[in-house]
Image 1: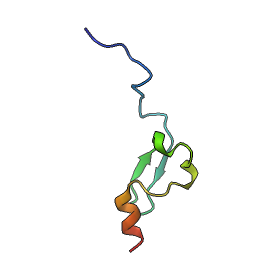
Image 2: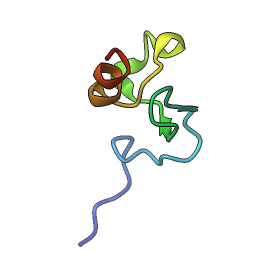
Image 3: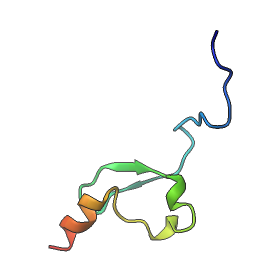
Image 4: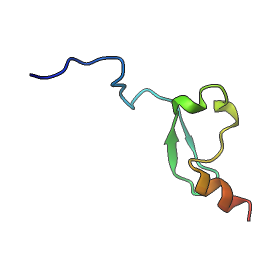
Length: 53
């Protein structure tokens, strides 16, 4: 028996995207960045710390 689609199963299309300042790869909005999306510049902690060296 298959589970019905619930709001927990969000599709990645339709989410805002940005390009990482360090590696140049695109990354999508995440819930943990909801309050601070305008200030997010890097796709990961690794890119953030690498850019400060």
